[in-house]
Image (cartoon, rainbow, N blue to C red; front, top):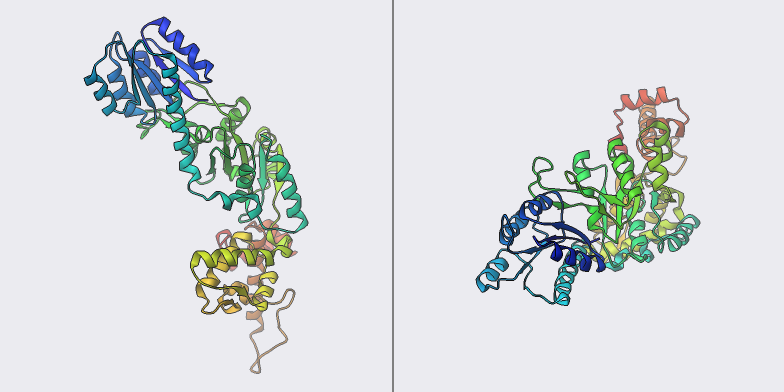
Length: 461
């Protein structure tokens, strides 16, 4: 909801403007003098300020100067009964959106405020929408014929028109953000902003400021009022990526915002209503996180209204050929090379590989191959070594021994290391899961992982 601060020492004028603005759907705050007004501006972020130029303890020009210093985004409208061209010019130079003389026409003021609101809305939407071409975000660009993907397509078509909170669960690289954008751009909110934030990429205090905003002086370095992403995404969609990495303290604050549908900026004392569709995304099993105590149960049930689980690429190998063709066209265009097809042997290698990095890894492999290819066909020679040298599933060619013999113990060590590393990749670096995958005790797996210096970072590369 658009927030407007009205500053006037005449109570009748304050009440009149409050009634008119509330009828237009704005949230209105009132101040009777300069001290009260400046205090409100310091503590809140307003979209528009309407101020009389003459006040008991100061004047509108001084409040305008202060407002532009602490909250540059706020539009400022001055009203005066004492017409002065010189004062009007000064006000405009200092950043006033308009200068209106009393007695004014109520429709004139309504139009001026509406222009300010419209301009601000367009500015916010342009910042976030111009970064992407809308056709790249439509649901038709998500590739998949596997039954699991078809089920997701049908579900998204049903839920896009609702305002329900959605939880998207899938391994890294499966396309969680792409599905989130598809939901947004096929919803009734598509004409407003889609905003995303990685909750695991920043410390708690910074994340709180990013989500809820802050007022000047709330903490060291807060020299201006700042709107949070909940406000920026007004009437649009907010994607909270990697929500499972959010601290307990932030989980409490997020839960309150979702339940109350309002936020309070850091250092502020006013509640700001929010109208945002929230989509949460994670590569973790949040049900397990609840059992382990790292995720609050009440927040989990609040965001898990409509769950969507995206299958990893290894579970839908039938889609690899379609994805290869899609990325071949896209990456060829982006790189500027006329690579038109993929050899049968390269396709076989793609289908034999388990893609721990999922669709994102496949796209990167295609882009790399196109950059390295000197012909119009992608061959195994242009693929990453871990794909091009992958042995056939279940075989290690140990019987094809060289004439001069082999180092059996060394060969076994190399095989064991490769198998354990691949198991870690498939299990997202979780040693306990990888041990179960290869039928080994966790203690033994941990011993060999330490011996071969296998790390989670290596598995997630």
